[in-house]
Image 1 (cartoon, rainbow, N blue to C red):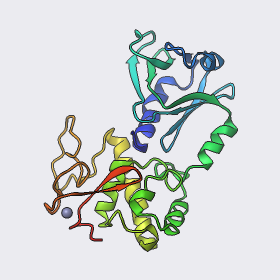
Image 2: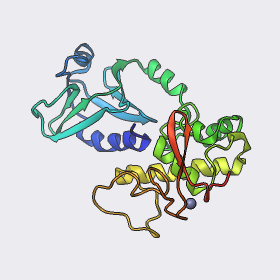
Image 3: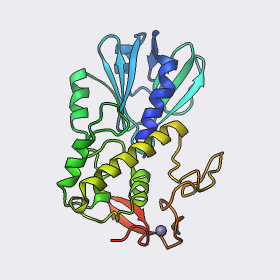
Length: 263
Ligand SMILES: [Zn+2]
C-alpha cells in the first residue's frame, strides 16, 4: 500500500507534465471510458493529494478521484502516443508525456462537493500546509486503542502507512501497543512532527529512508525492504541488536523493538 509520500510525489512529478494545456483523457481498458469522455481535451487546473487520495481539478468543473489501493500504479512515458501496455484504466496525454494508470482501487469523476465529503472523513494530512496537527493530537489523546493501530486510521491522520507508523514510534521509543490516551500530549505532538519530517523526506527521496544518514550508510541505488529502516521488516533492531517483535495492529504487522520501545 503506497503511503502519503507517494501521492504527494506523484502530484509534484505529474503536474508540470499535465497542467496548463489541454489533456487527452481516455481509458484503453474501457472501464473509465464514459467518465474520460467528459474531461477529454479539457485543461487540468491542478492536481491535489490528500492522504492516499489524488484529485484532478478539471477546467470544466469535474473532479477526477484516484485511490491507488494496494496495487495501483502510474507509468510515465515521454511524449504523447505511447503504446498501450497492460490494463490501462486511465490514460492522460499531453505533448510532454503519456501517463497511464493501472490497477487503481478507485478511478472516477466526482463533484467538488463529493471531494469535500471524502476529505471531511479524513484526519489531517501531515504533508499538507493546511493541516491542523491539533485535530490529530486530540483524536489520539481521547482513544484507548493502541497508538500503533490509531496511526493507520485515516480518520485520525491521512497518509500514514505501515512503514512510517513503525519507524516514528521507534524513533520516539513508544511501544506501539500502548493505549493512545496514555501517551502525553507532548509525545503525541512529537509523533506528528516526526511523521511530518519522515513523510517530507519520503517525497524528496521518492522512497522510504527513516534511518539517520549521519549515523548510517544509505545505499544510493534500489534497496530491499528493511535496509533503510530501524525496525520495519528487520529481524534485529538496527540500534540495539535485540530481536524485533511484531504486534498485529490495525490488521497489519507492526514491527517494534522491546528494548528501545519499553512497554
Ligand atoms: Zn532496539
